[in-house]
Length: 208
Figure 1 (cartoon, rainbow, N blue to C red):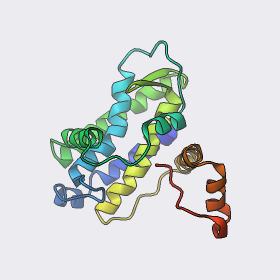
Figure 2 (figure 1 turned 90 degrees about the horizontal axis):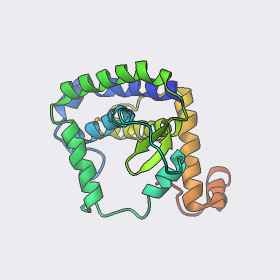
Figure 3 (figure 1 turned 45 degrees about the horizontal axis):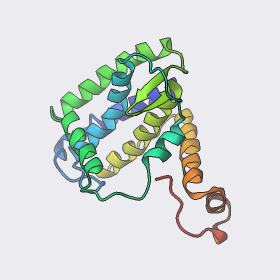
Figure 4 (figure 1 turned 45 degrees about the vertical axis):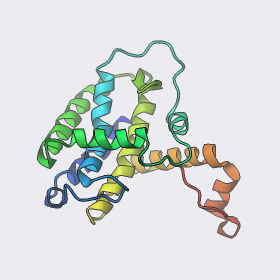
C-alpha cells in the first residue's frame, strides 16, 4: 500500500505542474462550485494530511476501522453544496492553494519526499487519527489513495487533459475499495448485476 500511495502521488505531481493549470487556475472546475485552484489544493491534501496526521502521536483507544467503513460513515444522501461541510471543503482547498500553482506543486513534492523517507519505517498497523476516526496506517493510505485517484480524474477533466494512468497496484486497490463501498451502500445484488448482467441492472450503482 505504501508504494501504491507514493507512486500515485508522483503521478499527481505531474498534473500539478503543467502550464495549463496556471492558465486556468481561477476558472471553474469540473466539480460544481469548485474552482480549479481549490480542486488542486484539495487533491494535494491527500498527501498533506497524511504527513499532518503522522506528526501526531499514535492514537490510543477507539476501535480502528478500515477505509470502507470510513467512507461509508462519511457518505450519505448528496448534501446541498451550500451546506457547511461542502463549503468548508472548498474553503480549505483554496487555503492550500493560496500561494499559487508553483508553490502548491513545490509544497506537494516536498511533503511527498518526506513521506517517501518516513512511511517505509512505520508499521502498517500503526493507529492514525483521521479527523474523528482511527484507521490503521495501511487503511489511512488506502483512503487517501482513493482520494488521489478520484481527484486526479477530476483535475484532468477540468484541464481538458488526458487522465494520467496510475500504477496497477493502485488501480486494483481503488477498484476493490470502491466496489466494497458500493456493496455496503447499495447491496451486493445490484452491484453484481451492474457488473455482470446489464440486462438486469436497474439504477446506476455508485460508491458515493
